[in-house]
Amino acid sequence: MPRSFGHIAGQPVGSTYGSRKEVRDAGVHLPLIAGISGTAAEGTDSIVVSGGYPDDEDYGDVIVYTGHGGRDANTGKQIRDQEISAPGNAGLLRSHLDGLPVRVVRGAHKDSPHAPNVGYRYDGLYQVDSYAAKVGIEGYRIWRFTLTKLKDEQISTPPAVAPQAVVHPRVANPAPVLTTTVQRLVRNSSVVQHVKAWHEHQCQVCGLAIQVATGFYSEGAHIRGLGQPHHGPDVEENVLCLCPNDHVRFDNGAIYLTDDLKVIDALTGVTIAALRVHPLHQINVTYVAYHRAQWTVGTPRNEP
DNA sequence: GGGCCCGCAGGG
DNA sequence: CCCTGCGGGCCC
Image (cartoon, helix red, strand yellow):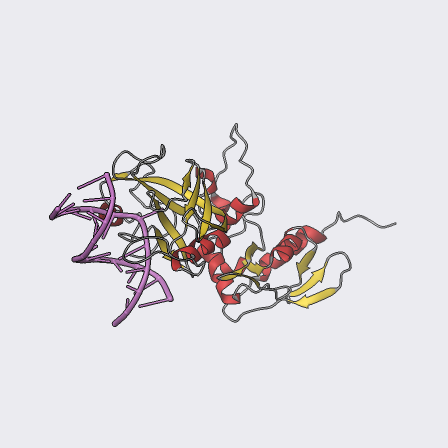
């Protein structure tokens, strides 16, 4: 069964299961025993919270989840430090860096008001807000991942086609203001992942690749913005791989691109770099021109 | 109820 | 292929 991120069709939040085999057969969490599903490269698609590690803390919408590793294979006792490079831990780190949603399944266990009374229950999607090491109850280093529950509007995937045709009805409630973290989550489509992979997380403006414990971090920047009022498409030709600084510069017009992909400093008009390109990553200059126009237009007027 | 061991399936 | 893992059943 291929790994998939986000909700599983036919498995609404609140679905219950009698055993880990049933959870697996539903496609909600694939491993039969392990609590963390996923890989260091792709990220973690799901976890099971069932009291397997004493340092877990479950507050319902916030979960502090213990990573795996460091246990004796026979006794199950913690006998050494956990490593961030262990596959499940590195997977949760990657989900944090890429803003991927994690399915959370809770299993029945004592002393948790948030766990089901019996069996397992799918409790929806969470994001990995942060992680850090600490010495756990058993006296060894553990890695702890803080997950918070996502609201429905935070996990809508960008449409595959440009949404010009979509009718936006006037609604009484204004659209929710999304945090930076959630924007990243909503925007991290497979398109963005492709672009990041081509550039190996290296910023196309300055060349910086931010490195953390088990990999790199970069941001996917849409050249012509998604959604209102720009309606840019979520396609590779409309996405740049940038470091956070150059992402902010680009989104605020402090830098823009020429049609031959030179990077211009908007304040001085000076060319500061040639955009770093990759043969597989075609960039559509229509979007480049659209972005540039946003920051360079002025009202035409008759000069005396 | 706890200990133990037999497991499968996935990841490296 | 080898190793591991927030099962689970069975025995005492």
